[in-house]
Image 1 (tube, rainbow, N blue to C red):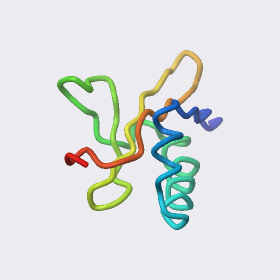
Image 2 (cartoon, rainbow, N blue to C red):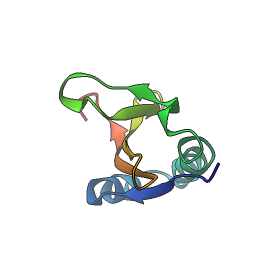
Image 3 (cartoon, helix red, strand yellow):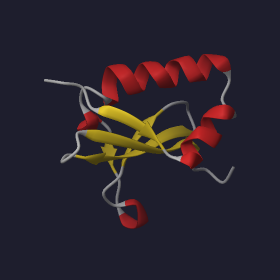
Length: 85
C-alpha cells in the first residue's frame, strides 16, 4: 500500500524549529516509517482533540496529527509537549 502524504501545519513547523537536531531526526524517522505507513498506529485522542492521534516523541513530547482518508494525507498539528510548557 502507498504511504500517506505527510503535511505540516504552521504550528507544527514552529514546534519543529525548537527541537534539537537529534529530535528532528527522530521525528522525521517516526513520520516516514510509522505514521506514513500506518497512521492509526498512534493513540486515538478524546475530548477537545477527538479525531486526532498522538504518538510519543519524548517523555513529555507528543506528535499530534489527524488523518484524511479521502486524500490519503496525514496532517501534523503539533510536535511538542502538552504538559504546560
